[in-house]
Image (cartoon, rainbow, N blue to C red; front, side):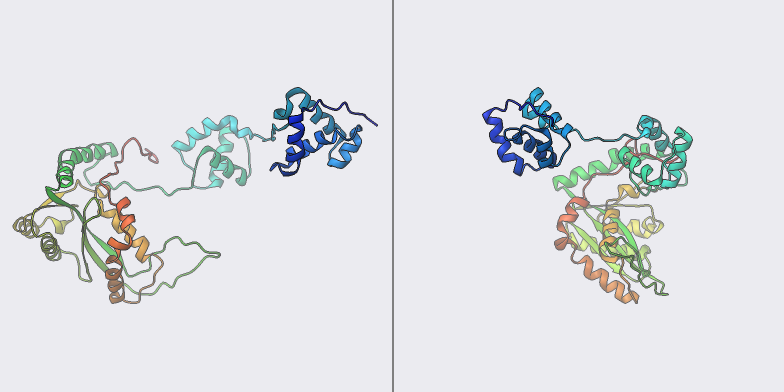
Amino acid sequence: MLKITPPALTKKDLKILKKRRLDHPNKKIRTRFTVLWLTTIYTKASEIALISGISTKSVFDYIKMYNEGGLDQVMDIHYYSPTSKLEGYSDLIRDEFEKNPPASIREAKHQIKLLTGIKRSETQVRKFLKKLGMKLMKPGLVPMGKNESSVEEKVKNQKKYVEEQLLPVLKDAKKGEHTVLFMDACHVQLACLLGFIWCFVKKYIRALPLRGRVNIIGACSPYGNDFVYDVIQGKVDQFSIVMFLAKVRNRMKTGKITLVLDNAQYHKTAYVVESASKLGIKLLFLPVASPNLNIIERLWKFTKKTFIANTVFTSLDELEKHLKKSLSTLKWKYKKNLRSLLTPNLQHFDGTMQFVGA
């Protein structure tokens, strides 16, 4: 029988051991405290080991811990954490995947094997990629005009437009000198728009053999406090645009109005331009293919996601009625959402964004 040499426990430490050996949240530390406390009662390591449910060697190890560093060392827990061989290739893999992002874990597994010669299961590869900070995300599209040859050129033109034309009118609007609205049309198809839902099993929605769409012509302020819209089943053309301009002027009877809008053909007809001038509305056209600068695009995305996704409509009349009812709730029911959604913070496709194959 191996006898122990009891550690020289201080009164303060003994008091801690008596209490914390029972209520300490860490099971391993509770065991160590129990062993040290039992050294005040028993002299044989085998007896202490039997009561504590550990090996005799561990009894001597815990006593040695206390003798060398007191309770601080006894409470210091080091868990074994195995490291992957891939860790040594982290920078190499990161550089490769930044240039050539894999479309699947299987593809990532193959690329890693070619780069490092190390073969790992798909589960291990997925865990490693997450540790690197990678996520499964869908790429975004950068709309390009017919005469735009590069993203750099597009960014340069957009920034020039924002600095010289858009920011001055936004500053005047902030001072209350005139109203600035971002205008566009949204085309809602009768076909069901699918969106993500939380569910226990995959759900299915009826795809009815129906065609057609309802159009929303709308204009909103960059701060979400003004929103004018028309919901129509007819097509969006120069005549419907002029009627909408009249509605905007009727809503805001006095003061300057600037409408920021895209280069759709029906926006730039002589009839629309002349009618806007007569109504005292200035039309400020965005650069070609620049939906990222049109703030109302965010509102249309929110509208489809909130009111349309996963909903089946059996007729255009039903869809139109639903849209009118839903849009009427935006300013009071979703006021908080609009405050964060409709802001003059504009997105640029500059150096802060990464491109695939660029």
